Image (cartoon, rainbow, N blue to C red; front, side, top):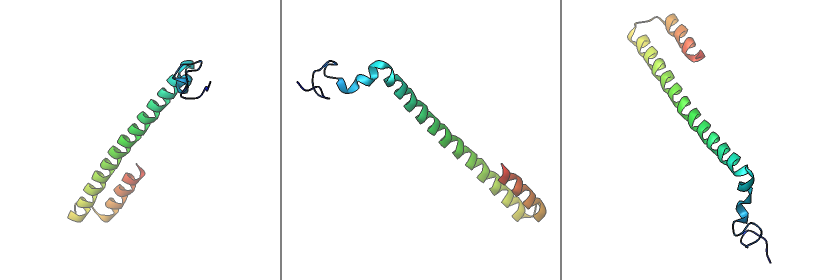
Length: 84
């Protein structure tokens, strides 16, 4: 009698899923859920951060081009934006 993935052995016809009976299935599922959640969080967080940086940088460029601020003020504010 074959006792592989598709036979009716000790665990019945689902012997390929026997790791779920001792708790590893729950841990594996939690690990996958946590990994997907972290990836989603970092993608959303980085896209929001980049958008706000681009908007601030673009606004600063427009003020400089229109002559509202001096070159020194532009460079100082640009350094502040780049540090964040």
